[in-house]
Amino acid sequence: YNPLRHGFDFYFGVPHSNDMHPFPLYQGEEQVLANVDEQTILTRRYTEEAIRFIESSKQGPFFLYFAHTFPHRPLYASETFRDRSEGGLFGDVVEEIDWSVRELLAALDRHGLRDNTLVVFTSDKGPWYQGSPGGLRGRKGQSFEGGHRVPLLARWPRGIPAGIVSREPAMNIDLFSTCLALGGLSLPADRTIDGKSMVSLLTRPGSPSPHGRMFFYHQGELEGVRAGKWKYFRSINHYVWPMPVNKKSGGLSEHTTGPLPLLFNLEIDPDESYDLSGKHPEVARKLADEMTQWEEGIRSNRAGGNR
Image (tube, rainbow, N blue to C red):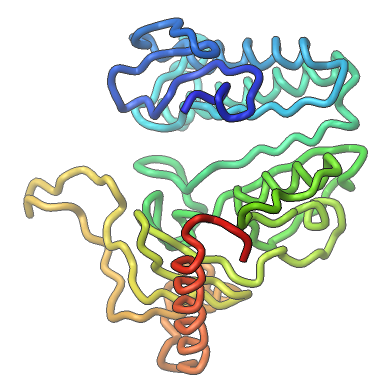
């Protein structure tokens, strides 16, 4: 699974999350450390290697994928940032990531790459134990908006007008199709690509989402679907996985949802507090049918061929 075996020319990083052991550090396919005993070094080391990559690639087009280890737990901040934030250790970690982003942007400026480089900053999921989901319901591991809806910031002075704000939904899997489109490349023809190009969403104010429907899974189980303002659940994971054990009950902390199915209008109820499945049963039935159709399409296309 090393990135060098999947199309990347350079790799510096760890093979999995930092709560798994051993926790080795690699450069390419060579193991630099058998175990990262002092994780406070990681944010700075990643940043230094990323800047070296930019400097070695500045003569032509390049793609840099930079995935920070933190703020995954356990949290670590370097001595420079430790105890600096009013947000505790979590805040220290975030401030060090802010520093990292600033260093990368400064490297682009130094080499005259600012205007024609697309920079995207986002997250793969909502917060876990700490961090704020912005008033939304749910956290990491749940299909509620707090588990999936995250900010996405994009800067490309030559292509994106400054100050655009869009509330249209897109997905991280759309970045693949977006990069191919910007590079003038077509999608692979030998498999189904679920991601859609976000070029118009990024560059043209008022553009709609490239997705008519978005499906929500938890550990392989299809739980819900979003279509425009409507979001429907036929099942929902009750637990923020994994959660600390509730010592009083001996089990996991439960987040109750009430009777299923659930239907929410995200335009007026973004924190998913009011079930409207009884008020709009026709909408609920339509979305339930679309989930069934989606599953049938997946079953008939397991190999990922054209659909």
